[in-house]
Image (cartoon, rainbow, N blue to C red; front, side):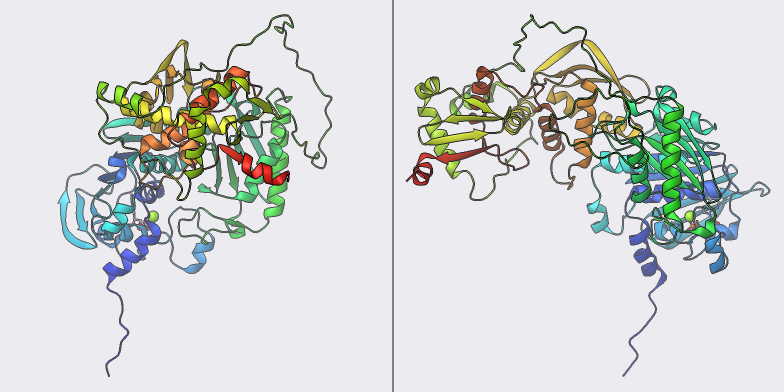
Length: 616
Ligand code: ADP
Ligand code: MG
């Protein structure tokens, strides 16, 4: 019998490795940028087409490759960066596995052009799916240019697995930021579809942060600096009053590499505790320098997780240096953000000072002025098929907008019952007016039972269906702003907004680009009651980012969900009777009144039959 075991061909081994190293275009971007940094470049260009699905190109002015090295670098475990396993412990440079280029070349069409400073001509190599196509001399500037075309062209399953362009681009920008934030002395330019996304000159760290995040950050950042035998810490944190509603701006770097560390993250959250609202996130850019012998970096293939030997001490040092920085900049907390009436006050952390309470007074408060302004306009849509028939032919419906509401199997029978009741009930409604319990629930009766509904959940459903119909008829109802507001976004959020600007428009947002990472909001959806547009918008983006992008749910549905959720929040929980009636009326006019867009109940129904049984 013949032997069964054989070695995998290199191309296959590379593809397997690629599964680990290159999950998506952003991972290739990371590897190529890190190589360019390692090559000692002072200028790096990143060029992206179709979120990296068509092209990723990195051009650097670094040391370049010899003719032989240009071939060698695509071999598996080919690296100039380590020779022995011991080197692994002391490595300061970024790449060290010698796997990236071999992996990338196994799943894409790669063209490398490179020239060293002393060489007369450069060399060009084309390699596709691990197969060498050609190597020729070329005239090319000093440094290296690598183009990665049609990523996953030979692994269709992986290609289909990629997410929408806006999401893949967001991942790419995130990788770029991680590299750019740790190499302020290198100039970077990023192009997306021939448009410049970022152009940052060589600078110091503070200037780099401001260049990437926007001028407003000049005023928002506080330096952090702490040297000790165990760890040196430097960087910046955001002043507490600028804490974000989105999680984006939180970065740790160790010895020049972006890392994640939930434990150390907790040290910062803890230091900010009680200084920022519960639903906000502190901004931080913290750089650790430790003796490389005291960390283990090789525990994760994408190398963002790092084990520190003395993590407990680092936690304590980090926590105290953050507290110190906040203290030094004399930032007495202004605790005037809204808190829930029954908020639990957490015990003071050990060693924290007890501050004298302060009282905020509203100088404009006039007890004689009665404000009974309704929280939003109550427009009562006529319900039933008739109305649909009336409006349908008036508009040119969007072809791809055919939403199928997600009904849970088995649901919907009881609600038909209630709905029928509700229709017959016009006279009854007038007699029994709904009332509110606990400043929250609306309680009302129909002929066959009692309805208890959560107004916020109900409003989510109402707004969701309205948004979907305004997507469909392409006639959003907008409120134009007297004072259009500018919002400074993080680069990724800005890019995401620009990608979605049309869909936002159909939802009723009038948004324009307004300088670097800044948008101008000229109109908001008519149903919107939120006054703080910045908060609203940041929450919507956060909802879009944290919501599941399964690649299938249409963008407009995801936007409608996130918008509905954020617009549904009531400014004042106490509702007027007319408002309650309006909500009931509008909810029952919905296609799926009993569930929120996410499938949670909006109401509970107790039939009189069940009630009677209880009183037997
Ligand atoms: P690693 O970075 O882990 O060594 P890579 O597969 O990313 O492995 O790269 C292999 C080798 O190719 C590197 O060690 C380096 O010598 C060379 N190389 C890659 N990119 C560049 C570049 N932009 N400029 C110069 N040399 C490069
Ligand atoms: Mg590398």
